[in-house]
Length: 193
Image (cartoon, rainbow, N blue to C red; front, side, top):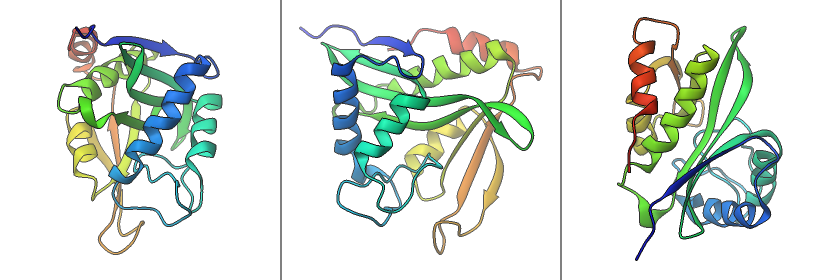
């Protein structure tokens, strides 16, 4: 019998080694799911949500950077990492402090169960508590990411053809200081699967 999925929120540099190894494995397993693919060596990370991505950057160096610098929301079931969301705080953008979501990954076997929403709620709650906006970016061709981000915020900026012809970089922002912030708090603290 499978246990429920548990949530852990960890500060940068505090992920236990067994989970760190699983995070690398999950990132590598899902590497090809991101659109568009980034040119580079085999095993290069092709995440649509990170500015740290450069051609040839390996999964290992990318994950090492996350482990060192990013805060992580990890979802674990039966001692197996099934999803994670990496975010940075504080993150300065356009002269304003933000919580910046860089990466969200769900194991293929666990997709469609609301796990991305579950990790997202934890990150939104942090932004709300700090009273700073939430920022994320993706590529216009990553429909799964575009759909997920549309539930949380609004398009703030589009950089046309930044990743190639017809591949725009889309910045999403959630303002946590407006009248809907109270609703956001309720949603962020609601329990999901």
